Image (tube, rainbow, N blue to C red; front, top):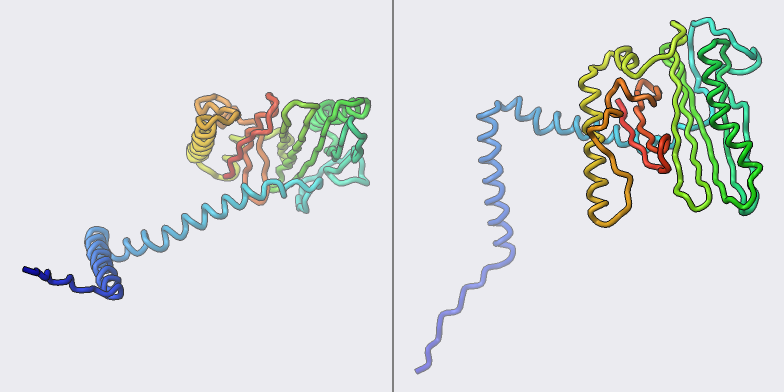
Length: 285
């Protein structure tokens, strides 16, 4: 006896899609209704739209500042206004200007492109800054020019600003000698022109009316995030520069290198200042 089983009725793909979308829509409506009852419609709208949009925009603006950090260095003092009477050493020059420039190369020996700044203010503290800059960067340039077959790459850029009578100077040098790894050195100088004194990061944070604990928390979060990223790379076999988030160097009172531009404070941890590495961390507040 032949037995013919009934054939399964065919369901169109279009119907399945419609039913699926309808079910998902109903679920979303139920969730939103429940949240609306719990939070209230106005608060729910703020959380879903305004709050989310603001956070995303803030994140994007922050990442833009970080990614544009290289563009900061233009070897100049940006336009400024100040009513402080500044006594210049050379009246013909700006408050900060490039006093030493070398753009030279010699095959197998060196490739150099440097612009070293000079702070044109008659002041004992500033004089000490200028001497330190000279000994650190100019003397290295002069000794490099005497080398033969050492394959040295040496570049240096700077940028300076004056905002709210605070002079801020940042110097960035890249140095690669022979087969050694590239070394990134970043040094900053911050001086209160009105009160004639060096200004610390903690004082700068207070001047900007920022909450010290909030700034410290942001530093901790950024360093911890970078630490986790580096650990992930290390677990994959990469050779990386490791951070220790518990290191006292990340405390505000111990953070030496910072730069002020457009109302933002760039807090910099350049590990090449003490080690042969190009690694650095940047926190902007």
